[in-house]
Image (cartoon, rainbow, N blue to C red; front, side, top):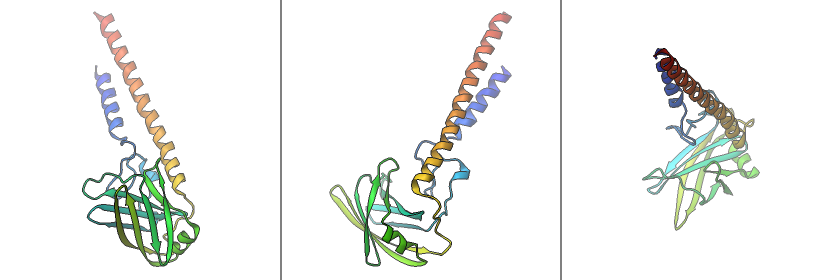
Amino acid sequence: MKLLNILFLCLFSTSAAIAGPGAHGPNGEHLDAPAGSVVADAGPRIETFTESFELVGRLQGNELSILIDRYASNEPVLDGKLEVESNGITASAKFHADHGDYAVDDEKFIQALSKPGKHPLVFTLVAGNENDLLEATMEVNGSDIDHGHSHDDEHSHAFSLKGWATWGAVLAIVLAAIAIALARRKSSSGN
């Protein structure tokens, strides 16, 4: 019976360590990715909000990745239209349904935004019948830009490691089931 209690404790501690898919922490980091794979300060970030919406963006690799939520409820704004303007250059953001974010990958826009300095940004959002302008300034230092990783690389890496964590949880459940079966078999043969 002592072995059974130990196995249940191991199973409980394993399941508590795995966050739900898409869970985000207070700094926008993925909680379902292993601790070693998330780099919270991998590139320049911006945060801004209005009465209706809040926006968080990060310049990393060859794109500006943007998450938008409703300010009052934190409900994600999915499949809207988003344009970004900075220093006379305008670019459209593409919505990634698989990640729930918007991404600007216009080469001219990203090159201009990647230069060291302060870059004023104006975001024009159209979400259903609502529209809004959000403004922010992104400060870029020369060492801020990580050109070695793309948005898809980061998510596929996190997914592959998350897959291993899922298999570990499945293995713990199978081991617990075997321990229960052995404990019942031993107690029934001992009577």
